Length: 64
Image (tube, rainbow, N blue to C red):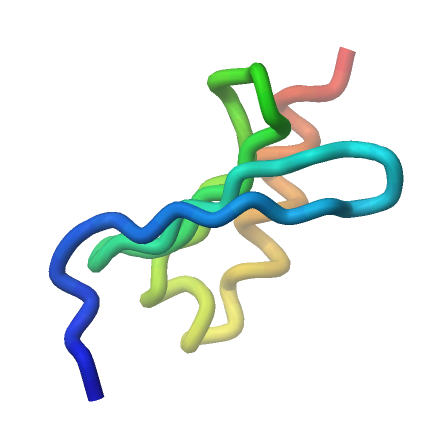
């Protein structure tokens, strides 16, 4: 396997919106194209099952 030692960025189409997915050694980040803020998930949260809780918390903080 090739180690993930630097950020890897890819464009993802979800519905009608374009997003940038960045994978790095710390985790992943999904951001709508043209924006700076998005969803951040650490690898530790993902494997421990805390990812859903972290995503819900982040969404509640960003809600108007």
